[in-house]
Image 1 (cartoon, rainbow, N blue to C red):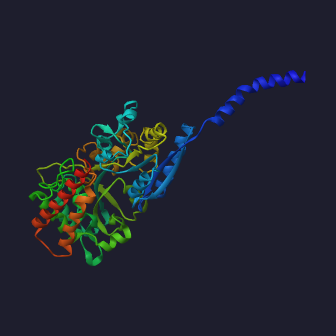
Image 2 (image 1 turned 180 degrees about the horizontal axis):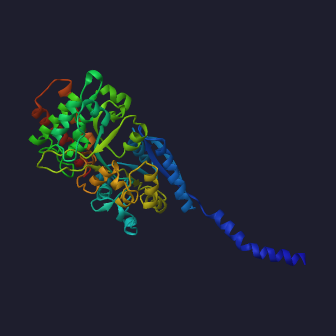
Image 3 (image 1 turned 135 degrees about the vertical axis):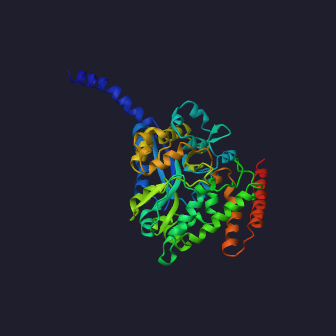
Length: 427
């Protein structure tokens, strides 16, 4: 009798034992996800990476995600070094110009995209950051625009009216001059807006009447040295007269507005979480000033992009992680945590951000963005264009030179030769 009972129990347990053996035989895939930390990131930013990784694992029990966070400074070099050694991450995010896909280390995600609908909900400004020659080589982590933050306390103390939509760059300069009070350590504008910064990566680069590169980023002669761009650069350099000093940046980084001693500064959604958490003063935001009364504002937008290494041994699983991170569930989690602005309008609208007094300013620009920032048009922009423009600023501020036409002409020739050499070497 006992033998029959044992046999019966054994027969009943065989399916369960089979499942256990099968589970033991199944290999768990471990994905490596590299990410960055910037000095102004909040604690929630670090936590969010692990929260998203654990949520993904719960939905994909055969996949584990190993998250590695590195300082943002030097992160790109770290990634390139690892890839060259054959040990790159499965996925990471960065902000490459799209033509870097020609180097071959990014996986072409087009086949995965064609089988997915995840991209249907993205802002166009975010989508085009992921596309090169009609192929997807990435997917947007977020979507941000740039706008002006202003310190209401400084405005009130100076008796200056808050800026209003429709203002111009002349209004901006005039207001900055009225707020500027260096004897009392109060400055009209943030330091990064003076010098080459406002031509390289700020919202002013679209709204000063000039452009420093062609749309594909390969041509600077005829742009950087044009009369319009020379005058735009002059506006930027003269803005240093009412901008926060370099010493302030040593303490507060690029966003000197955080000090509470700066009247206005261009910021983006990337800076808003820290500002909301740390600011001890009253502040507001407003859209970019336009060039003049006869022009419309050109919105500035950007996105960090998730990439997959072409050498990954787990591409299908890596795509599943990218699809999750750029899809509505993860986007909602990141938005509710106050860390990243969603990559598509649906979550903004669902959370009421499109009507928010801060986020609504950004939303209205994201839905109208048509231009790609200068520094994202060519993979060689920083190597070739940034340096010559910095030299112009040094010659102006430190050398006292004022022949801007000659300086910009020389910068254009140097930058063009560098671009031409780099692109020729790839052929």
